[in-house]
Length: 252
Image: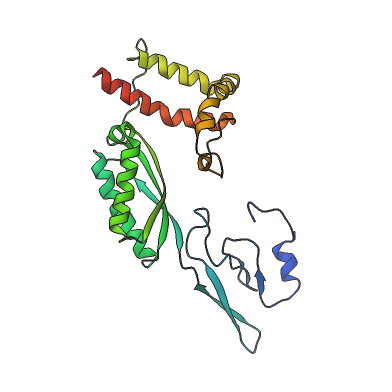
């Protein structure tokens, strides 16, 4: 299974040759039917622990008839569910439009999960005019999204994290701003992204900020890895539109 060491390596054909009527496989937390005849099945875990284990969790109830034919059905057992809420914001004009779209998407998601208490990761993506408002004050719009979820879910929905991945409807005209401070900023960001040595130097410049960060931003899969050049590139790509939109807004 992806993400796991081969602790008991075998193939589907290896298991079929044993002529068992049903293979109940464990350890892997993702539910999956690997083969139908005979059934070779990972039931997954009975309760999702974090956002990387989304969807309903439970077990398979298996019945075997007199001819040794195994029939199985999934039985949900979880009491709390993790989910991803993807909001395609392309075409939105204002931040309020994004909130309306999120509310609709969240409503569909809660119906899909039958009003189960949930933790949701919200990802807003797409090129749109609303990007300028979102990028100008991401903290405020993140709080608006959390408040919308609180109202819509009647207290049953917890927003685990909000990722604003929108972009400007049109790319910045680099030629038009080439002789301006904005053009210089764009050039510098591009230069940094293409030069691993400069990125590593930037790591040293960020040491003081790193020491001041709370521990939850330094741990886990989504931690801020200032010592990883690829992660720094991703951060630069994220903040470049925000910086440019703010500078251009001030200029106008």
